[in-house]
Length: 365
Length: 218
Image 1: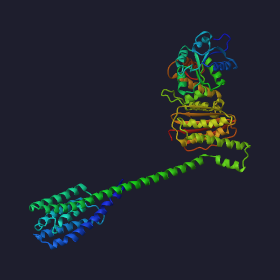
Image 2 (image 1 turned 30 degrees about the vertical axis):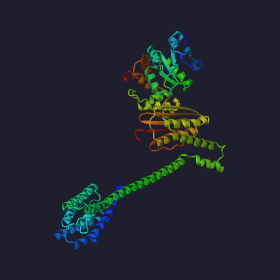
Image 3 (image 1 turned 60 degrees about the vertical axis):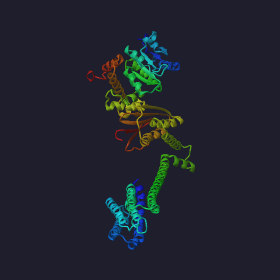
Image 4 (image 1 turned 90 degrees about the vertical axis):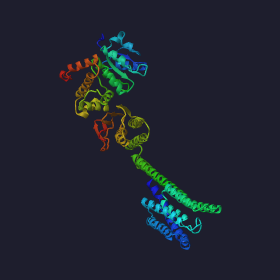
C-alpha cells in the first residue's frame, strides 16, 4: 500500500511544477504590463500586492522544484497573503476597471491558490470561493453596474474559475489513474511470484518423488540393461522391496483418518500378495504423526516385510509418549535399516527371525 | 466340577460356524476340553450342563452392535470364569472386559493356541494375556490405569509385537517363566484397580498363593 501511495504522489509534485510555471508566466507575462501601464491609487498598494504574490511564488518554488510537498505553515501563510493581496489590488483599481484590462489580480491569485493548496482540496475550494466572493462584493460595492458590465464580469469569473477547477479535477483523475495502475502492477507482480513459487514447489515435489522412488529406478535400469537376472533370488528380493516402497509411497498421499496404519497396511497388502502370512495388530488410538516421521517409521516395515519369507508379525503401538512400529519376520538374513535423529530404529536376528523396530518419541519431537 | 475330571466349557456365540470351530479346537486339544453346552444366547451358560461348566467362552457381540458387558458382569459376579472371544479389536472394550472381571480377552484373529491356553488358565482361575490384550494394556491411556514398572511395560510391548514368548525371553535376556510371571503380575495390578469382582479377588488370592505377589505389595 505504501508503495502505491508513493507512486500516486508523483502526480502532485509534477502538477505543482506546472502550476509554478503557470503562476510565474501569468504574473510576469500577462500582469506586469497592466501594472505599469495603468494608473492605480495609491500605486504602492498595487506594487506591494504584485510583489507579495511574486514572493509567494518564489517561496513555493523552494519546495516545488525539489519535488517536496509544501509545509502546512507555508501553505497557510501563503494563502492568507494571497487572499489579502487580491482584494488590496482590487481596491486600488481605477474606476470601471473591474474585470477589464487593469484588473490583473483576480485571475492570477487563483493560480497561486492552486499552487499552495493543491493537495488540500476542500481548503483550496473554500479559498477560491472566498476569492470570488470578495471580488464580486468589491465589484458590487463600487457602484451599481450596468447589464453589459455584469455579463462581462460573469464571463470572466466563469472562464477563470472553470479553468482552475478543471486543473483540480484533472489532478484527482491522474492520481486515481496512477494508483490503479500501481495496484494492477502490484497484483501482476504478486501473480508472477505465485506462479514462480508454484513451479518451484512442483519441481521440488518431482525431485522429491524421484528420491522416494528409492531402489525402483536403478532396479528397472539394471533389468532393462540385462545386468540383473529376473530369476535370481536376490533380484526378486530387490523387486519385492521396490514394490513395497511404491505401495507405501502411493498410500502416503491418500486422505485417510489414520495415515500411519493406512501406510503400514499398504506394506502388509504387498507382502500378502507375495504369499507371506502377515498378522497386523494396532494398539492405541490415532495420534498425529508428521509425514516425514511416518516415512521414517514405515521405512523399516518396508525393509523387513519385503525380506519376509512366509510369516511376519507387524504391530503399531501408540501411547501418549511414543509411537512404535515393529516387524518380526522369518527373513533369515539381517535387514539393514538406518536410524535418524528423530526415529530410533533397531534390528536384530534371533534364530530364524529378524526383528525390526522403529520408535518415535512424541515428546522429544 | 465335571464328573469325568476333564475341564469343561460352555460356548456362547451367535455364529454356528464359530461355535462348531471352537468346539472342535477345544475337543481336539491335548488334553481335550469337554464342551458342556453351546448356544447363541447367554442363557446356555446359566441352565443345565452349561451352568456347571468350568469356563464360559463368551462372544461379546451377540446379534447386535452393543457389547454384552452387562451379561459378562452378571457372570463374573457369581464367580464364573469368563474368556471373552470377540470379533473386534477394540482396546477400550478389552480394558472394560478386564474391569468387569473377565480372565482373558481374545480376538477371533488369534487362533486355537491362544484360545486353548486362555481356557485352561481360566479353568484354574488364572488370567491369560494374549498379544492383542498386551497391546491394549501397553497403550492404555486411561486416568486410573495401574502403574507398571519399565520392565513390565517392556514385556507387554515385546509380547504384543512378536506374539512369541520365546522371542520375548530371548530379546530381553530373561527366562520364559519370568516373562509369564511379569504378565501375571501386570494382570494382578489390573485386578486390584477399578471395581471389585469375585473372579478378580480369586485371581489375586491365587497370585499370593503362587508367590507371585506378597501380601505386603497389596
